[in-house]
Image 1: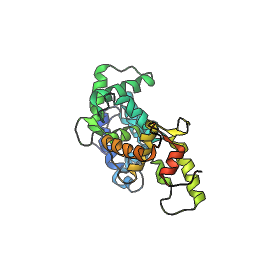
Image 2: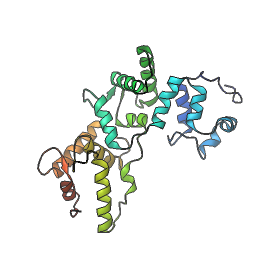
Image 3: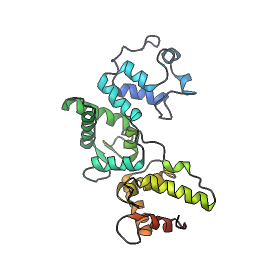
Image 4: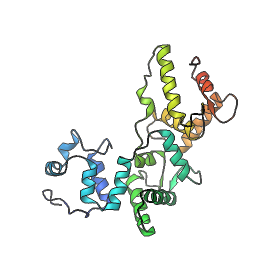
Length: 247
């Protein structure tokens, strides 16, 4: 490729563009920044800027541009929303997103954007997404793979101190945490709310987790916290489980 001229618009496909973008965007934020810029073509950055969206719109077709930028332009707000999405598309509850389930996800994605895409194109895009995001090449996506596609925002629990703090600070932090995961505002964590809470707790010590690991930890948490055995974690139950006084 002529580094001065660059490829013609639309001459790259999503896989090629992502491979280049991921190589230089080492922190996977969607931008080539800081020391990453030194490794990228200065002329290209001067002309196009460092935003992945600008680069994608220059080189990719409209559909491929949309697929690539979905993860950067439509991040999910929480792990609860992520687990809701996971449960919707892991239809056989096997703990992985298969190629067929990923195709269904992409079909719904285009429908939401009112874009007409043929089944042949869906198959092509599904294969491309698998090529980009299936890190272990087992033809299925686990939790961490799908999290990369959906650009899940930073772990909510990272903002809280792990060292000793005052009773007032613990009370404040507990209220923030419970409100964040209790999206239904029912006063109890259930279903994807429990899963989202468990996912974020596990990822504090293990960045990449599998669904089977999450399920095991959730069962342990429910065993210790679900006093009335209703399959939910009431606010008062979580207080007791964490050894806190009731806020």
